Image (cartoon, rainbow, N blue to C red; front, top):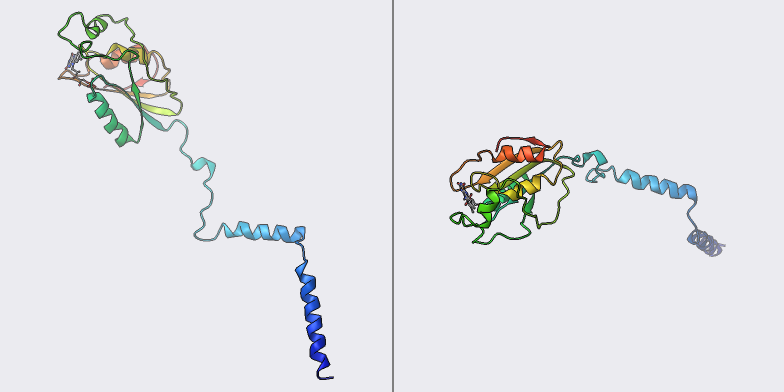
Length: 196
Ligand SMILES: Cc1cc2nc3c(=O)[nH]c(=O)nc-3n(C[C@H](O)[C@H](O)[C@H](O)COP(=O)(O)O)c2cc1C
């Protein structure tokens, strides 16, 4: 009898294990497991998903727009963009300005002719930019004959700056911003233009 009892116990144990091996999860157990997983996300060290309203709000971006024939104003624009964590958009002329075009000693050069005629609007070659989401725009250019290059007028007349703070900046051989900022504001017709 002493030898039979352990054998019976062993058989009972094996039958019990066989029954557990084929076990499938019930819907109730699945739900419980899901609840445990959710709680795990609240544990210290777990990063909860960012709520949607924690994202930067639309309209909070800054843009630096620049036209630069010989690179000086572009260098300034890049510094502003870095300081302001802003995007940079370069206005490029569809027909690039050559050295001969930029010769202000020549009364017949392209730039002299353009600057002498306020109605000229040189074509922009760079791809159009969407201004959606920008609340502040720095707009830079070289001073040509005391004013903004006419291609800047092409740019400001092509966009709607409603609700946007516009900040002109320029480089020159010594002249100030002069009336260029006001010219741009007048031609744009929209935007909150600050002094350059
Ligand atoms: C056609 C032309 C006209 C210019 N007129 C003036 C001017 O009236 N006053 C001035 O101080 N500099 C004048 N400059 C010098 C530029 O404003 C200066 O070199 C500027 O920094 C160039 O910028 P960029 O390299 O971004 O094109 C003129 C330059 C050119 C090419």
